[in-house]
Length: 295
Image (tube, rainbow, N blue to C red; front, side):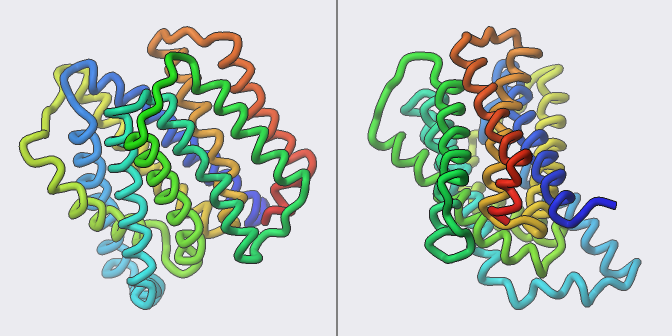
């Protein structure tokens, strides 16, 4: 039987894989007439509906009211998570309007380093040279893998991408605390409802559905998001924020590999080197028991 820590690692890998698979499907949606705001709206609506039905069903059909009501005293923290998560996605979406996606993505994935820094300052993690080297190696690997084109620096776009990273940092750090008391379905439902209200002002008159196979891609991207966010909160209930955030460096690797395999994007030797470095850092954290020290 696997330990709680091992289960958390598996949930984190599943979440990173599912969320990483969204990118390629979203690109298909865009190519076939859809847009990012449509993807985000459908994502929040369906996630809220599906998890809401599960929460209600479990509450009244299985008499699980006490377990699910554990989140009542956490309303303020859940509100912060919902705002941070949704604002982060909105900031990221806005950032790519002025800077290349590769730059925005690299800045966004500074959040594992931010989570580590906050964890060290909060006294939740004892910093070590090995720990810092693993996080830094993963970030350098992402830089090699993501930066494969013209580098355009625009202050507003850079600031928005960094704000998105701050949103992810808050989600991981506070989410790990709340997920100890609130089950993933309830937490995902409440966060999705908050996100839905936040994104509504941005989508008025902007909803455009894709044609043909784009609808299937939209459904696939939404399904991956639901699986990813549920697994993310399940992982945070079992892992320290720094451990979970470190494993989520795997997410952009999945995006890059799927783009190469299904969208025909050709990776340069530098990108392959970056992917290899990220994977090596993740494997090394297991072999050297670095993840256990983070936890």
